[in-house]
Image (cartoon, rainbow, N blue to C red; front, side, top):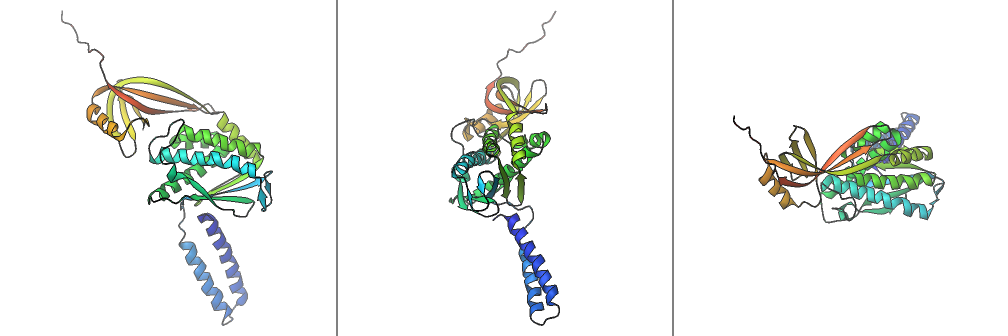
Length: 314
């Protein structure tokens, strides 16, 4: 059960308790008992902070793969959970390890692995929770990732503009898994309610089909470019860089996953605020509405060996 679901349950109990207290009137026992219960429920609601996040998510499905609240097609479950897990792992690697490659293993996979921990009723739900690890900080990080994934799915179903806005902090590999996830949901004529903490989105089968078409129409083109300029710094904690091109254009982005922490520190020492050439991977995302978004990954920095020119005398 997510924080939002628990809060909704307590609010329903509070309404019922208040109604019973009014019916009890001035009864010396029942009136006091219901008043005490009302205060207890109000305290429990206050202990659940608004906007809370948790390392847990619930996917409620409806539609053709589901038989009421009693069962769900096992084949559908297998097909839909794999891209969802991949989406979470890719977003986690991008957010908290700085990089996520186009393929292969991702950093922090063990810390973002989800376990099927319950089958809540209400259509048919699949509760996924963080696998137990010895790390103490990953729970908050995974909670942040699950909140972002929920917002991303919701934005995808809303409009081209909402989808484009949510992609500002989304890696291309996340979008690949999002497309696969929506493909399974839409082709199965399923409805979805996705919850994590206080985040919730609800998609009917028609919205799922529209969301899949929206993601499918998004095209990403990548190319390698060389830019002369000045390295303005690399932040090792966030794995981000700033670069000022020779024509005074600022480029910011992520470091490539092939660069180690030692190499990144060496780049700072060698090239900070000095003329150099950056080898970059430039990715341009073309949306269905005609808008574009460009991002950069720094792959390498080299000395600028371009011969300097000087003005000759008469």
